[in-house]
Length: 224
Image 1 (cartoon, rainbow, N blue to C red):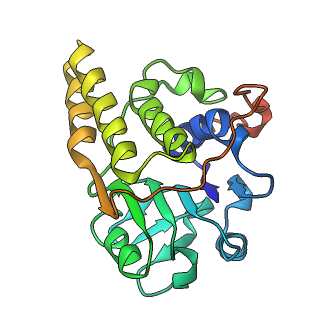
Image 2: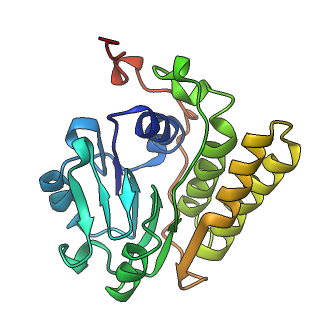
């Protein structure tokens, strides 16, 4: 299943890329977005059998959040069945420090996430259609491509190496010093845990291609 926080610019952009490129190949009823992404709904949906768990949210060493920073998973305060035998991939800060290893100990077959903060650059003008931002794409498309490979049956190790290589290639091409530094940081910050050969059941790609969801999903916030 997939849980997508959407309450500020970082989560809006991160979730937006997943909404456009990944959700079209996910089984109906297997994702939460925005106001649906709350602990009660998450716990209920995540309790159903599945072989992967993807979360976009704000992370700390021992927890990751859903909408309005409501904690979805926290060390010592979640049902192990939510992660047992699953390939877990988080787009968030810091969860690789404590939560990632804890989930492996609780029976997750693979984990990928970031040990420290996930830092990147976006143009706020694209907040109603973040997937079109050429700047944010340098960081977020490597994540999308890695998740796409995971859902196609690639191994934990192959998915990890694909994302890291994309960061490296983008950093090598980058002329802006700050962007190059942040791409290199993402390359070194990404973590892999669990069985390197772990996979999920391959999902079919949508025959209609990847279609953007209605822009109303991303209401423009008032500046007042």
